Length: 330
Image (cartoon, rainbow, N blue to C red; front, side):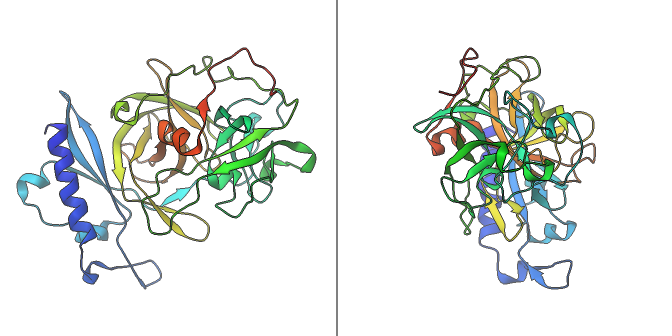
């Protein structure tokens, strides 16, 4: 169907889900009750058309979907993807987990109270040059305070207090009532810390950062992250609302997200949180990776979820750093 018609169908599905009666509760793995976890977005069809992407945590969540008729059912792509989790890490060896100077995109980084995530890139902020990653990587899922140190590598990779490279300056707090748009934070680089803006595979991501409505499904994309390094994939859905993401203590809901699956195998894994995803055809930086599932997707290797980068930068008051000739924070 036409993308605008798909958006209308998506809106009907979301309205039906949000007005579902208590009988929509389903059993969880422990035998208790929970609201079904259903995310809804748009996925591409040949000829510039679209279908509605519906992502379920469990097959039993199908029962929560409103009955919109057979014609609507034919325009819906339903996949069971399992739980979506914020991508914190467990220790694993590898080049990107080591202490790295100058700093470069893709290396291990974290708040002292976190295991490890990924340094996604460098931005300009009111506090000066800064590193960009997730709230749950740099701000410990709202548990940190502005002014806390940031380590490279992260603690899971052996980071110690003398590995400090930056200072937490801003993050977007999570909302428990849903409607989160980003999992993002910035940390101002400490004076004299050398950086390499161009060290993405293939060279720098010079921008500009595209508007969210120019992130198209079926685009080929890439990322470099602390755990799975350089991987390729494609965008399989956009404008995805209702993504329920499991953090250590709570589930937070996200809207307007980008869904990616790997070209061969997983696109990402634990510890890749904070990676910047770029478009292969023009190397435009598109999105900030923050979560994923280990199952689902056409290849069965799971799906990755990311915030549109333009939204991240707007909410954090940051600007993508496009000057590859500035090797040191000043």
